Structures are given as structure tokens and as C-alpha cells.
Length: 108
Image 1 (tube, helix red, strand yellow):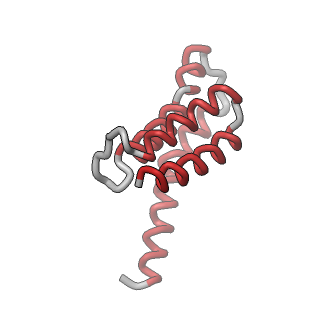
Image 2 (image 1 turned 90 degrees about the vertical axis):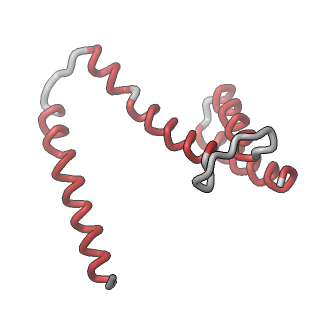
Image 3 (image 1 turned 180 degrees about the vertical axis):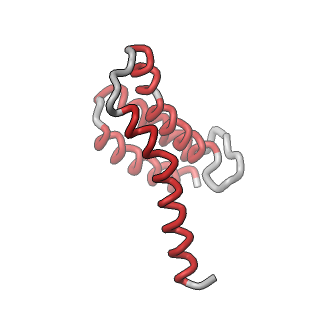
């Protein structure tokens, strides 16, 4: 596949993504949603992030990896605990990276 074809596919995907998402955003942005709908929609970012994190922790290389010696799992637990205690996204991110690197060096 040529470089031009790859860029054409990327551009086509961007246009398709915009065409699918924009109409609903344009319509909903002008309406006042009921409280239950706003509350329901507020859980979507958290759910999407949890899905991404769970996939990265439990299947880091595409294979299920759940064990006591799993540095991904322990780093995720430590990161979650740090965020729960201090409510700092940047702090939790830095803590998670440091924990993961240290645990990977120790646990292998």
C-alpha cells in the first residue's frame, strides 16, 4: 500500500467519524437534557477509560495475563490507590509509571 493510499484511508476514516458523530452533537447541544440523561451521559467517559485501562492491565500483549507477579496489575492498583487518596491525575500518572518501571524490574 502506498503512502498516499494510507493517508487517503486515514482521511476517509476521519470524515466518516465526523459524519457519524457531528449530527447528534449538533442536535443535542441545542436542547436542554433532563437530569437523568445528563447523569447517564456523565458515566460514558469513566466507562470508556475503565475499558481501556482494564484491557491494558489484563491483556498487555494481547494475551490474558493475570497473576500475582503481574507488574501491570500491581501498578494499576497502586495508581488507583494514589488517585483515590490524593485526587491528582498528574500525580497518579507519574506514580503509575514509576511503580510499573520499578515492579517490572523487580518482578520481571
